[in-house]
Length: 78
Image (cartoon, rainbow, N blue to C red; front, side):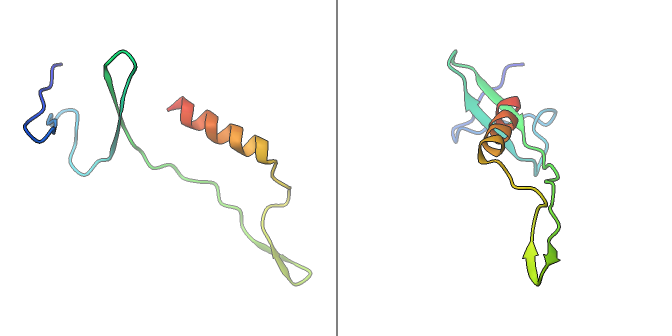
């Protein structure tokens, strides 16, 4: 499908771009443009609990390197 931008640089195609939806557009090294619809994901929530009068989050210590690699892997999978 060939799309042509108007004078303001906007693309319009009802079958591809539904109203009120968010998209991410990235220019690829080969000159093409990759458009991805952004979908909202549920984030895991850690419930706080009270231990010895103090509020504590997760039961385990989080490893900073594992968190960084998980975030990076999630971003690259999109």
